[in-house]
Length: 449
Image (cartoon, rainbow, N blue to C red):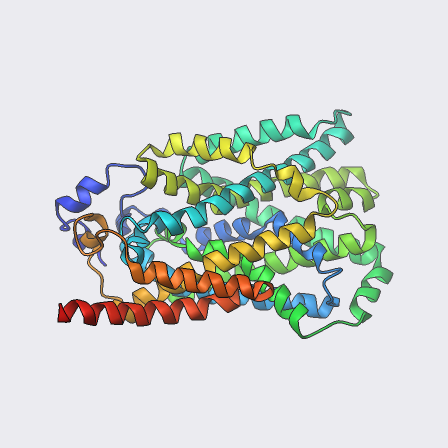
């Protein structure tokens, strides 16, 4: 949809867009070049959750080769799904919470919006605690001060301020952080290989499985990133014109696949070497040069900032803007304060990897159906023909709640929870099929009535 069309959508759009973040971003006002967009995603994909999930693969029944293939395969599937789901928001400039209206209806939007927002706040707190643990390690080395709680409070306060700046604040942090963190990751991997090559050899040669443990690992690494592919619209709406699906897909692929594979493998190797589940503490433990430890941990802190800003802060902020009808800055403060009370310290205990993996699988069972419904709705129901004003008219075509979407989501979540080890993979097909069938049935029934 061209910018000229956005200007002629009528009063419905204008009235609904007085709130921050809900306005469709016209092509002429978008800030992101393709190269900058890649850097944003590179920074956003450097997630300490990938480190922790990688550490869980040590006891997950996979050898190193199988782990690398599983992580890369899961990341590649995420890339494909992101390209499928980003087109509507790229062409129209609408955010995720507005995109949901087309399938779920204005009132039904609250369900998938919260399903995305709540896990994001949990991740926000988790990432902040891990970042604070890195700052605390630096603090112990440099000044002898040891209090992760104090650093958590300070670090989270900094992130609240940055998120209140909106996408511009996120763009600046991610552009700086992405490249730096990747350099640090490469160095970390080389260091582990040089110092503990015998352990690496053992992990390579151990017996593994190409069965359920392999596909479970694939699902875990889709799951830890599946929230990104659901609300991809919140970032792609800032991308300048001229970026087709191949260019957008390349940006996602060259950001996500190397970053996630590096993080997952490093987490696996650090835990294999040290037996410590928290990879931040484990890495500080095995590194002989304290100066290098400080630099590397600073890079991890930077990576935590980039991930939180793009992946964990922005989505729930937009959700609250839509639901509570508050300004973006106020919602940024609320989301940041909620992250304080998510008990993130429980997710970074020595036994946290398995619990974190379960959280990822449950989230996948919920978000997989949302993705399937959005894609089926746009490509198979609407056939890519949309009227922007419908997305902003609460009394129009998307009025109320769409029972087909709710029924499909229930079906997908149920199947995903039953087959929890492969929850995302199991949930998307039944959700998509049920949504398509129910939509066609309700349409025919409506025509008869």
